[in-house]
Length: 53
Image (cartoon, rainbow, N blue to C red; front, side, top):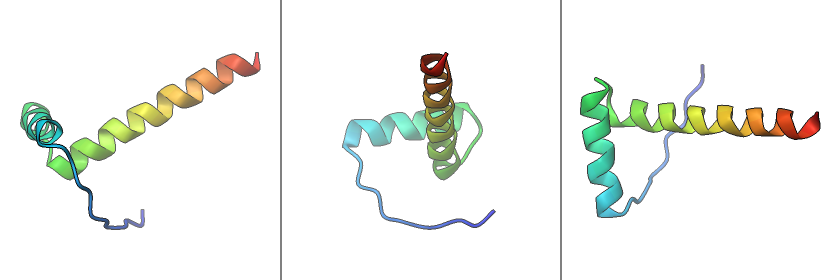
């Protein structure tokens, strides 16, 4: 899997939440962001599939 880096500015409260969630899930902050984005992608795909029926 090819990866790409980019700078991400977060509001302070979101950064705190990210740090806490990463620790709670035994992940790096980057891995936590990817996990959240993949979950959102999955939800979106499920909604799209439901709308097509």
